[in-house]
Image (cartoon, rainbow, N blue to C red; front, side, top):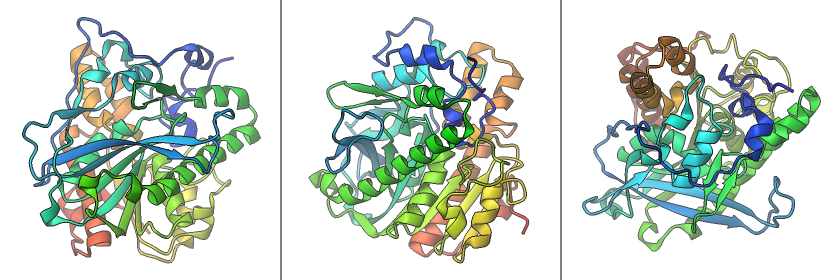
Length: 414
């Protein structure tokens, strides 16, 4: 059978996997692929804050929970990356965006519309976070912001925004949802691949089964997030002890990660503020589909949240956002980024134009992936929106003039 197209970049939870040719993808391995001469190498924009950034990656094991995707595994295993303000970064190498196994998995399964992923050396991209750099204790303890990626996406696809928040004085914890993300590489080189394409293949075309899969995906993600909050203080290396202010915790994410952030906030009061970048909060396959609301949309929130939509996504076009807004009693903010597409809120905003130039991709491919807004406008706007929100909601700073200073950002009409 032919899989439904994922290339529309819909904000449904499975929009990240439905476009793959599912049976073929399921058979591929995510082991490290050999580099081919002439593959394109990419760069990411430098953070805009005053602090250099350090990073450490950690393996977390939840022995109290059997893995929901692999029945034979009696525990749940996750990988996280912690970004933090560093005192100095000399002698500490810049961390890769993706490890070799993760890069091979991303090349095999990804959300790139009409982009030949096998022509890219995904393992060559370096972030602006430095491995093992000493933390700057003088400015801490720091507010904590967790990040969840879109369905099927690796945590590394949010590097541009996460590194920037860390450079502004936050500890940012990037979470991979194992067997959801394209590929997760654990210490020692073991790689665990996504099972979502095969799960979707089994559910399609039964809409009830697809909705059940959407809900399971979200339930697993929220459980992962709550375990992360439980485990983080014990999991941190000694050098980072005492640098996190656990009374000031926020969360954000793109697509299903944005849904995850707000649903986890609904379920766990430790999360004081949440930002959702273009993610529906219902178990539907298209932004505009009504019904099948999540509990966060039905109950609303009593703490601050931010919705940022691609061009055309607002309270009038996304029913689940409208429900969430109406049912909430805390501070709420809504913005649309003009000219943006769904992937604008990921590292693809920086990557796609580079790929277009190097591979001769047509303008239509760029627009299909990241819209019409230029990276030089989109990336600063996204960074400003997130930093302004978390500065006000976690740090108590007062800065309400953002939309006027960023003309591409339009507040929701209410």
